[in-house]
Image (tube, rainbow, N blue to C red):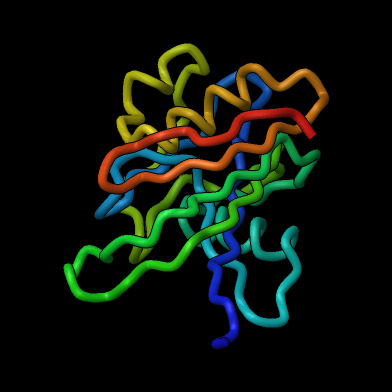
Length: 160
C-alpha cells in the first residue's frame, strides 16, 4: 500500500481591537481568512504566522484552536489534471500585533472587514462554514468533515 498523502493546512481568523476580521482575496478562491499549507519541518503555529504575514502583511499572535476540518474528497486542481488529495485544516483565533496590509503572489487584496459583513464577501461554502464555526465558538473546538466536490456537503459536525 502506498504512503497516505494528506495536505496539512492552517488558517487564522484575525480579529483586531475594533472587532474587524482580516480577509484576503485569492486568485482562485475569492475572499478567505489567510492561511495555507504547513511546510516540511515547520510547526503549525510557525506556519500560520508565516502564511498570514505572507498573504496579508499582518503580524499576529496565535491565541487558540477553534476548529479542525477535514476535506475528505479528492478533486482536480484548477489545471483540471492534478489530483488534490484530502486535506486536514486547523483553524485558530489570532490577534494582530503589527505589520501593514499588503498582498502577495497568492493574494490580490487584503482588508479589515466588519465581523457582521464577512459572509457578504466570502462565497465558498467551506470557508463560510468554517467562519460560522468561529462565530459560534464557545471555547470547545469543533471537528467537521466535508467534501467540496462535486458539491459542498458536511458529513460530520461535532465538538471535540
